[in-house]
Image 1 (cartoon, rainbow, N blue to C red):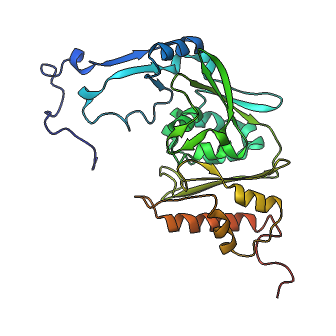
Image 2 (cartoon, helix red, strand yellow):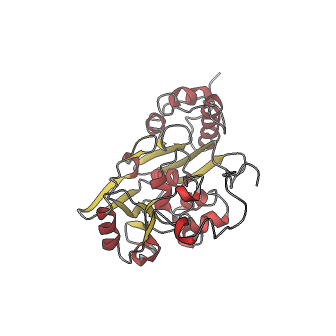
Length: 310
């Protein structure tokens, strides 16, 4: 377990005499609502300072190095049955706040009607993460590398936010304001995600990483085309998952894109990748353009070498 954080001032093993159960749990309070209304009330009473627990796959990532330093209020949503199910309505697939990636992977209807969701879900961590991780948690964690968010956004998903003040809805492509910044008040819960059932002639998710799964994306891109036009959504190339609107407009207007460099130039207005431990800005920008070129050229006659050109 190389690299695990450890407090070397503590002895190995369990020393109940020195670290008794009461002392270890000091400062941590876990609340267990059974309804959305109860959860909203608990969150409000905590002044918006409580942490909501869904799949909890990111909980210990942010946990203090010393267990004794943990404190705060946690609201465990696992007992809220209304958040668990996903359902198909006439105009949308509705994902409950606790719907997992595995729930959608196992839904044959999703594979037929919204394959981009299944493709993205299969790249999230390992099976253990897919069975625990939730779509709502992927949104609320606000990671720029969120694969699930890219797939939802490319399908024009709408997020439902619930608080004691009522219900608010917001388009996912308008949800993020910057790095880890969202239009989500501290007293609101993501109770559902509505994914329109619009027919797409093109729909796919492509991830580039050290591995296809069990690794965070170096870049990811979701592509869709419907009556609403083209949608191109990229992750790991900006402070938050984002639509590449300049590229979308070029595709809608059938602007000739004869080579990869044309896409690189367009992407300059849409993405702002950085150098980090996983990759470099130059690699991300170049690979994103090449992935798009490779995917779009067979689909769009205006992408790639122009027929009849000398």
